[in-house]
Length: 627
Image 1 (cartoon, one colour):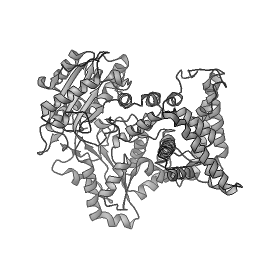
Image 2 (cartoon, helix red, strand yellow):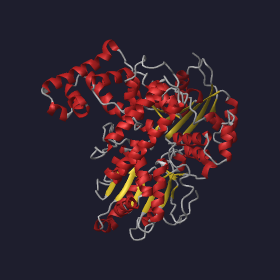
Image 3 (cartoon, one colour):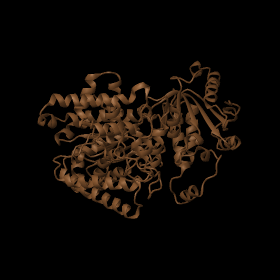
Image 4 (cartoon, one colour):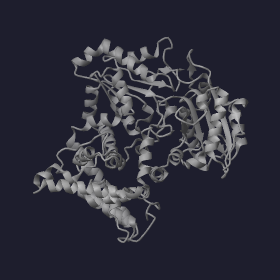
């Protein structure tokens, strides 16, 4: 996407000129790695407040800013001094506030969607084999969805918590809220009018990763209401890291939009900037420049031949020592908190961090990989916000915290139940006994499976389980023919497999998505920067089907599917891998060590030399270690 803006006008000035309430103009800001995108966003809004805020207030309007994470939202709010004229929120919070008053429309949408799901399940039942787990599960799902339909008209108000479990009968889940909002924004003129009149300016940070259906809806509204609505997109298509973002965002921006670009990379050393420019050269030709303050920096590519006897831990420790010598930086000596280890693919981080058994089946299902990575996948919030806190408070003997969790979430201490029962004290004792019985699963140092925990929770009625988890927890192996295959899809149900993992794996998974793990990936380090970065590339360990650094580096041939997708202009695994490689390399502030495990070291060396990604003295091939 070429920059068509006037070079004599600063980027911040150009963005500010678009935020004109009388002559609105939409824009897409190209903001590459380390370019100070958030600083520009905040400074422009501060200027807008000084010069235009009165017009906004007179009309009872606000500026909406959508961020990708709660942390980013909090940081922008802080920088804007928590000014109520600026509504800063995550996408889930923002769209829920838009649709929450449309209760009747939500009800009809849920009715129609649930009927559609029932029809699909019943069609699968007709085609499936009798006496299997799949048949039993589908029957349970059909019954559950029919029950939802039956009580639909009894629900007074649908509820939703962007940061909660949303497991109540009147609750909507994360995926439903996004779908409903996208549908309403596209097809309900009143909803469009509400958005435009309330928020004449809508700014979206990390727009390349905002869900495609929502971006499409916002584009449609901007096209219809361009005389009264500014849509401002901040982002970089090369840094799109989620598969449900809009693929071609940045290449299809209307000619009437402004297209400012922030070219200066204030974060990375000059050598890293030259590298990432080369990495994206064939994608869109966008190049960044260093500021006067950027140091030169050091980059090394360690090409390591894979073999079954290789001790990768020793390899990486030796590489760290090598980097300490090359950089004369003693902080590289040991792989600890001074060195950020990044992986290109989640399987690798899951394996190294010890939660692969929980993670792999859910990620492989591809039903909601983004939800798995940000903790919103159906079922995950229940485990994170109810099961995990309860267990941890029980193990720490924090009786007060346990009581709070049980009062808030457990049917055993439901307010109406306590009011109606003859002996509320006895009911409280029952709840306490249930908690003690659950805690007994950890006796003698046991690490129970998640399935064992859910079965006990279901049996004791400690919590109301989400539909699909409840179905699995209620199963009895004698109820139906043992089967490891779904008779329609041919795959073990992902959650059934994931729940065979231990509770400690859930804890490690939560650390990972909270960025408390010793390993990070392209999602966990989004927007972050580190002085010393070690990037691990290992297709064999990653087991990924969406990414392949071996293909990117020319050590593995493209598949017929890759060639077909490329010919049809579709995204390939090489495209995805190139973006991830770009994002992870661009985190380094001083020095970068890239560790490439490969079966064909010569092919990798030949490719990166030909592409001029690395110089001869930056390539290291002798690092090795065997078990």
